[in-house]
Image (cartoon, rainbow, N blue to C red; front, side, top):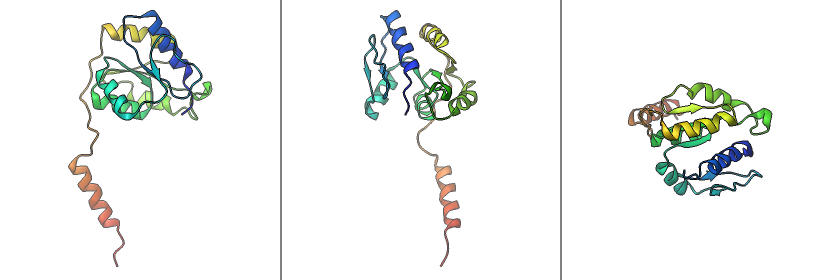
Length: 157
């Protein structure tokens, strides 16, 4: 994954300006290292899930993995897309993902750093209502449908 230093720096600056709020940042392989919040480059999935379950506001990029994990845990999410034109991703697909999920209950999308900081402050005091959680397991009906499809598609001797 390409660095998202613009995002990491913004969250770190917000942590500096809001020292009473607990903040933890997963920063990936970027050059910027936070000075005002604890961080990890990459966390094991068990620790990541534990931190996600315990947070009151999940702030992340507009990646499908982040969105799905936030929906599974029923967390309010504040998301900012990585941008290709700023060297943060290989395409602009996160802008399309933001457009698709931006009106979902519990998700707020921001376009830039000033919006990110303002919404972090606002959502700490006035949380979004979240929608229903989603399961990370396929329904029995879906599994049966896929099995039936694959069985029909299998060549017969």
